[in-house]
Image (tube, rainbow, N blue to C red; front, side):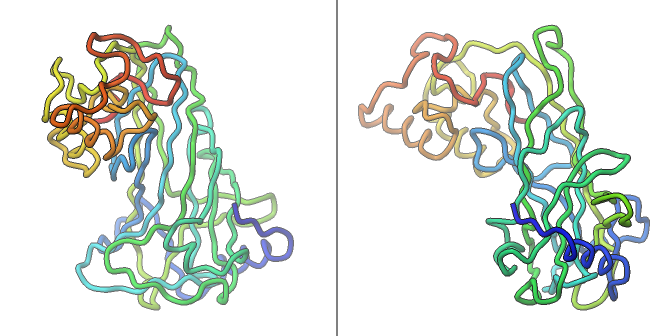
Length: 313
C-alpha cells in the first residue's frame, strides 16, 4: 500500500477542494456523461476474473472463508479516444463498503494502469470513513505525481482492493442471502478535513461521468458432494467439462462453472486453463487420473479456498 501522511495529506485535501476543472462523479448525477463510466471488475478465489457486473451472485458454504478482489476502472464507451489527466484537483477516487458484511484487507495501485503511470511513493492511498460505511481513497496530490495523461481507448484500471466476508454465515443461515455493495461515494480521511470526492478530468476538461456500483449477493448454501473434473455437473467427465472450464474463464455466459471444486480437475486450488488441459490429457492421452473424489462423488479432502457450491452465475 502506498501511503502519504501529514503535510502532503493536507495538500491533497486542499487540492481536491479547489482543483481546476475537476469533475464530481456520482451514481445520482442525472446529467452524468454516459460516455465515461466508473465501474468494478471482481475476482474470486479459483477464477482468473469473475468479470464485470452490476449485480454479482456468489455462494459460500457455512463458516467457509470467502475473499474477493475488486478492481475499480474507468471505461470509455464513446468509441472515440480520450485522455485522462491525473493531477492535483483533477483526480481522486473514493470507494465504500459495508463493514458489517465485508472487511477491507488491502488496497493498492500496484499492477494497475494508474499505478504504472505514477511515480513511486507520490500517490495517496489510505483508508477512509463515511456515514455510508468504511472504505478507501486514492488521489494524485501533486501534478508531478503522475507521468502525464493516459490514453483512454477502452478501459483503465485504477486501484485494486481485497475484502474478506465477515458477516455471520454459519449453518443456521443456510438458505439466506447476504446482500452488500461496493459503491463510489464521498469519504472522509479525518476530522477537520472536507470529504474526498470522486473526480476526474477527461481531455483536459471537466465532465460528469456515470458510476456503476456493484451489488454482491452471497448465498449461504450447504456444501455438496462432487466428482473431480465434472465441471458442468452432468454426472460424467467428457470434453464438455473442459469446454465449460474454458468458456467460464473467458466469460462466456452460456456455460458457467457451477462447482469450482469439481472444475479444479488437477486439484491445485485454482480453476484455470491447466484444468481444461488436465481433462483433455486424461481423456485422450491416458494422463493422470483426477484426484479424489473420483470416480465416485464425495467431499474434497484437500484444504483449499474452493467450494462445491453454485460458485458463480
